[in-house]
Image 1 (cartoon, rainbow, N blue to C red):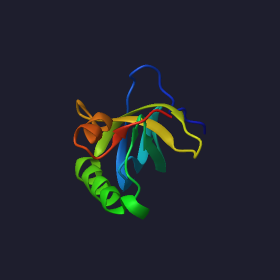
Image 2: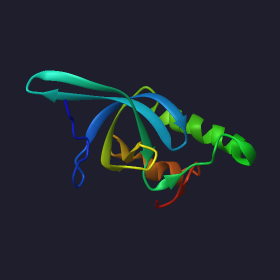
Image 3: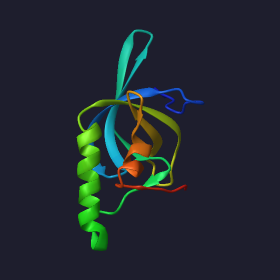
Image 4: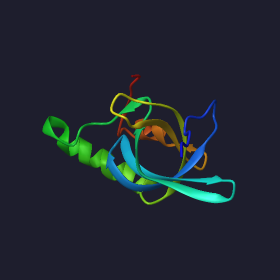
Length: 119
């Protein structure tokens, strides 16, 4: 079965965050209800669109760990909404993430754990 997660405009899809990899990447399960049947896409990788967080290795290791820990405290184990316009070159879904009305991508930048970056 093919399930289209690409959405138009600001249409949101709810996902359940299962793991935070770093300050701009996480893994989530996606549930869809199709004609009364629930389908789950497990372990989908999401890259937060428009931001870049420090890496968890090399010179930025300490900052990268702090960024990952902060994102974990915000979305870890929670249901969040995502707007997913496309996939990026590594096969991850590009997403703007919302926790209620909070734009998590912008919040990461506002709190100093990421910078804006277009790809």
